[in-house]
Image 1 (cartoon, rainbow, N blue to C red):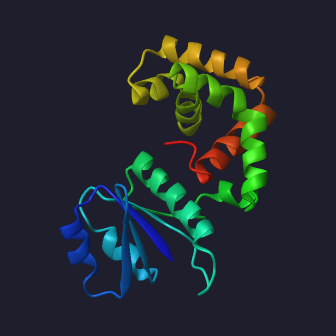
Image 2: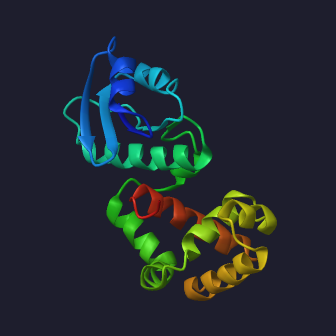
Image 3: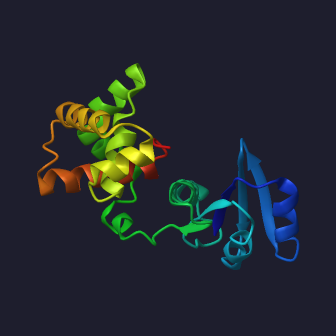
Amino acid sequence: MLLVVRRTTDEALLRCLESHPHLLLTRGEDRYVLGAPELAEAVGELPDVAAGMSRPFLPGATLKVAQREALWAVSKAAESGRPVVRYGDDSTGRWLPADPAVLTALVEHVLGEVLRYDAAHDSQLLVSARTWMERDRRTETAAAALHIHPNTLSYRLRRFGTLAGRDLTSTGALAEIWLAIQAAGTLGLTD
């Protein structure tokens, strides 16, 4: 499996891994660790760590899928405050196809206008909608997590709905948006 590790020092990580066979690579601020699934348990004991684990894969398999899975999982670990998140623990992932082209088409269809608007205006609409949905659509709780006023969040959600062309009071629209947000995360398009 592939483990992507953040928020720890190289020294602490190396001490943690020293009794486990592994391959350690550095890419930017991320540490990529190839090894057995038991590594996740050891890494999870590091203070303040955020780590994401891919599903196990066969020797000779491409690492692109494992990398996407581990990057998605580490972003979920960082968001949730959990030390280690395993890809696939979130049941939403099973509803998404593995094909990046299909995921990209879903993201473009549902979130394309929002992503372009966010990029042009640094408006944080997608982050606001995701945070609101992650907190069961509780505006006060989501606003507190975002460090903004609830009225500001309400405005952002209305703007998000307008740009996405989706009614955020519709269960079907919420399901489609949630899957598109998860697909964007899988593709590494969100923080």
